[in-house]
Image (cartoon, rainbow, N blue to C red; front, side, top):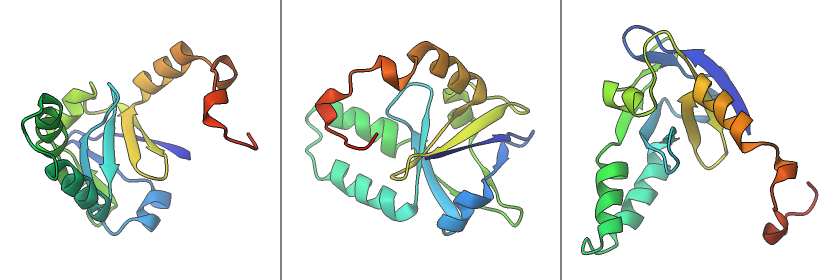
Length: 144
């Protein structure tokens, strides 16, 4: 995982970190994240897989309808411009309480990129404590 910080400009654009751009093919699908305060960004191929999984479920259940509205309905293809910037619509910035001139974090968690405000990230880190405060024994992850 890597975390990068950049500032949103007055037009709602942000530079996608060069290290991330190297792994991407010029675009990200950005939508609401599963956790409050985060957006989730996927390659178009990753997002297509997620979309197909959601659409394979009947819409009779409230949870699937909400997934369709929140994840699919909010998804936006963000292509990078010649300077490596992407533009997000205002409703996505508003969802994570980011205004022009504010710093945001790109957090590469390998299966997606999470995006949040720098202020939210710092506050969350402080509230959540350290990994040593958590009981991770049920995950059986060796070597940590």
